[in-house]
Length: 156
Length: 156
DNA sequence: ACTATTTCGACAACCATGTTGTCCATTGTA
DNA sequence: TACAATGGACAACATGGTTGTCGAAATAGT
Image (cartoon, rainbow over all chains, first blue to last red; front, side, top):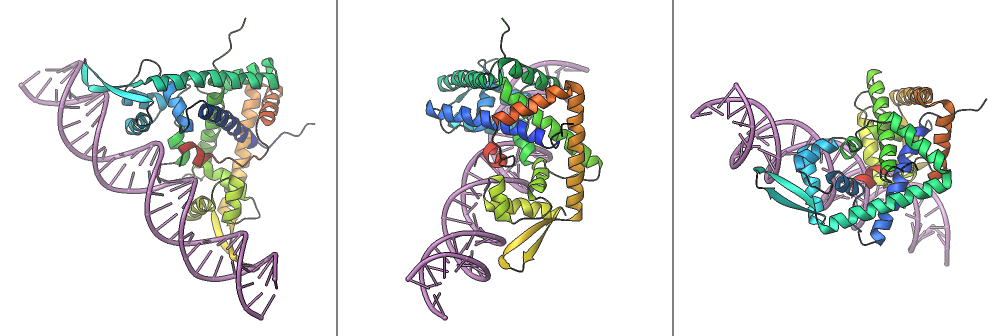
């Protein structure tokens, strides 16, 4: 009879796993010339994607208010990762696009994430990692970016 | 040749897994009379434990400043989950202890977490869940509570 | 015993990020 | 043409974390 771990360990381990990966990512990003980024910024760049979006759309995608999305865009714009443009077909929309620096960061992030995943595969075995991912996919919502996280954790 | 998922999916799934569990926990806690708790509050109660601590010690345990820990204690005290007492042997220390309500919440949380873990076990199979936990244990630091999270995510 | 250092708790100032509410310009529709 | 919906900006507010400072109390050192 194997004693099971207390139930509260699972969420904590999930969070710690996330944390470890993100910390490693940002340590490496900083080494590659992208210091100053906050943990969530990478995901915001990822969520914006190569084609750009608007603040309102980004908010919907991330599950936060358009105002909050707008503030985040402000921050990333100040850091030089995003640029705002206007849409000739709709004067209300302000399209947010990655700058070259933003695109560079996104590419590096992708490579680093793949590398980190490779390290997990080395440590755990490819099959077990695949199984882990499958299991998580089964237990989590499909919308990868509906993180919500910033707001939901701190409260507000 | 099975195509591997992009590396950035793994951290996101870990985070989403955490989120799902915590959301479920708090939905159930609210149903059981403990509405108004923030996601991190449960972990703070957990980290305080049945014997109580001080704000400074709690801060060290959680990996945040004593001031931040103090503020969190304030919040939980306002909500009726914690009570401050004084230590006769050290007039500087203000011992923070769970109130009956706090202890009740902690017990219920434990039961709910076990139940949620059981649901994952049903969905994934006990062996796979055990493997998942083992793998995460292998890839994450041992100090379960050194979350840091609040500060590190939002930035500051 | 007296002093110097450490520790605890509190307060203040500041920053980041979220929320809601309001308002205006623009677009699309009845 | 009038009206509703949308996008963006601004303001006010709450939370939670940080650093810095300070006084009170405990501890170490001479």
